[in-house]
Amino acid sequence: MAGNIDRAIDRLIALQDLLQLKRDITDHSYGEIGFETVDPTAVDEEIESLTAEIEPDIMRRFDTIRRKYDRPLVPMRRGVCYGCFVKFPTGRMAELLEQDVPILCESCGRMLYQIP
Ligand SMILES: [Zn+2]
Image (cartoon, rainbow, N blue to C red; front, side):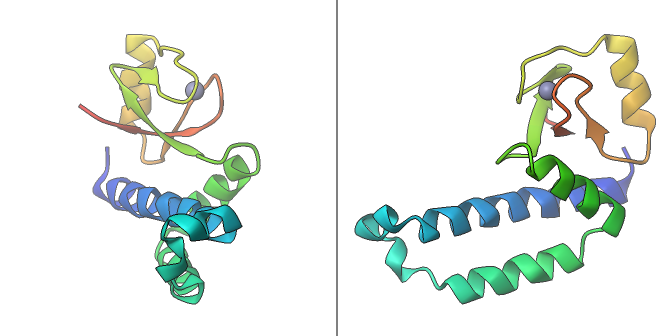
């Protein structure tokens, strides 16, 4: 996997966390358990800053998948997608890992990052 894809994935993981945080702080019931200390404007600014540093093609893809899933990016381990638990054939995995684009699950369509 190319280094620039790894960097984009790292940013997307952080972005996904921030988007979740934003959902949590806009859900009023969370105020009762401590989320009132989070500044929504600061979260928005950070989301904007991260988004600007992600390649537009990858960002567009991420946004498209996000219309369908709250978590568009999920880990993949031993060829298994952690979004839908479908396993990729070994040969197909090797093919996908050589490409210079984020891997998409061929079953659920989520974006994948490989973990050991
Ligand atoms: Zn999947």
